[in-house]
Picture 1: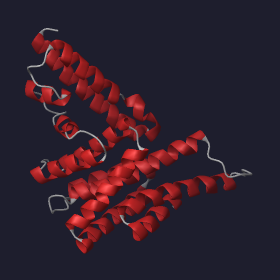
Picture 2 (picture 1 turned 180 degrees about the horizontal axis):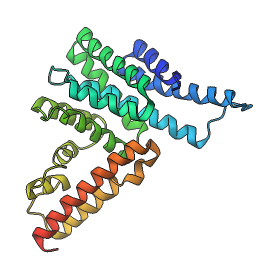
Picture 3 (picture 1 turned 135 degrees about the vertical axis):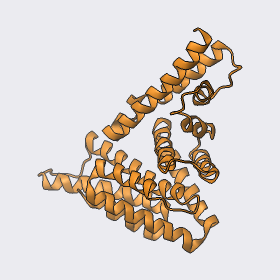
Picture 4 (picture 1 turned 45 degrees about the vertical axis):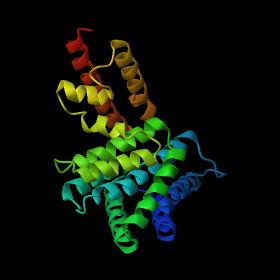
Length: 256
C-alpha cells in the first residue's frame, strides 16, 4: 500500500476541507507514481497510462469517501452497516490499511461538520461536487452516485433526508435528481419500479420508451468505467443487468 495519496488527502483536508482532500489525494497519487518510478530505476518523472488510470481510480475513491461522509451523516446517525460498506470497498481495492485510513478520514469529516455547522459544511460538499463534475466524466459520476445510493441503502432503509441529500449531491455534480429515483428502484421487481428505473412515465409511447432505454444503456455501460478498477466495473455490470431486467419487464408487459 502506497501512503502518498493518503498523506496528500489528509494534508489537503487539513488545509482546505473536503475540497482540499480531493486535490491532496490526487497530488499524493502522483507522488506515489513518481516514487514507484524512482524505485524501479526510471530515469525521469513520467506517468504512463497505467499510472494515470490508477490516479483516476484513487481520485474516484476519495471522492466517494468525502461524499459518503455527507450521506452517512445526513440523517444525523452514523450507522455501522453504512460505514462497513465503505470500509469493505476500500479494503477490496486498496487493502486493510487503506480501510483504516479511510475510516479515520470520514470520522474527521464528521467532526468538521460539527465544528463549522451544517450549512457551512454543505457549502464545502457543494464545492467538492463541483470539482468532481469538472474532472470526472458522466459515466464515472453515475457510478459514484450509485455507490452513494448503495451506502444509503446499507442499513435496510433510506430516509427522506438521505434521499434529499443524494439528490443534492447529484445536482451539484451536474446530474439530474431523477438519477437517484432510478437507482433507488433498481432492485425492485414491479412494473412501476421498472418505469422508474428507465425514468419514464407508464404513458410514454413505445418510441419514447426505446429512446430512453438506449440513452440509459449507453450512459451506464460497464465499459465506460473499466479504467476505475474491477470493483467499480463489477458494480457497474450489476447495475447494467438490473437496468436490462427492468427493460425486459416493460417490454413483456407491452408485448414488444
